[in-house]
Amino acid sequence: MRHRIAHRKLNMPISNRKALLKGLACSLFINKRITTTLARAKEAQKIIERVITISKKDNTANRRLAFSYLQSKDAVKALYSEELNPVRERNGGYTRIVKIGPRKGDGAEMAVLEIVF
Image 1: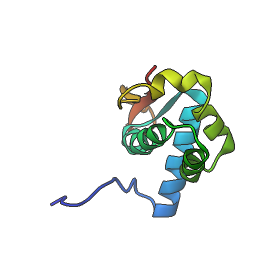
Image 2 (image 1 turned 135 degrees about the vertical axis):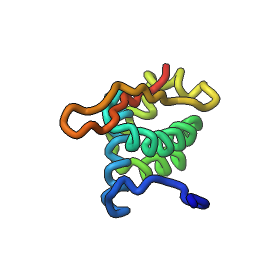
Image 3 (image 1 turned 90 degrees about the vertical axis):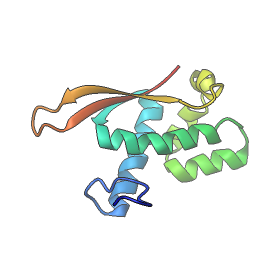
Image 4 (image 1 turned 30 degrees about the vertical axis):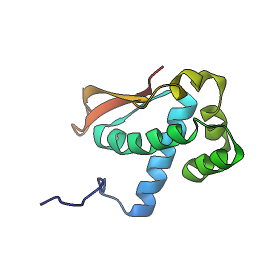
């Protein structure tokens, strides 16, 4: 049974998993679109949605909270940029996952994770 299991382990220890998800989130805020595996995209989407919700109010406390999630000044600066103002006005659903088929090498299901404008 899968009761009370909140996330995917992604076949790695928790420290590696946290670093991977932070890296994916930072890359998404800087590049607006990333390509990764479907499982990683679904896990990263949870963190990204939380951080964008935090960024709706632009004050020092929320900027520090966003930095605690992302650990990157460039990503926080991109998060609070004028480009993402339309995204922050939405009521949830800030990101979109589009499946693009299996990866050639190992057949892993690939997806594009992008910010919805």
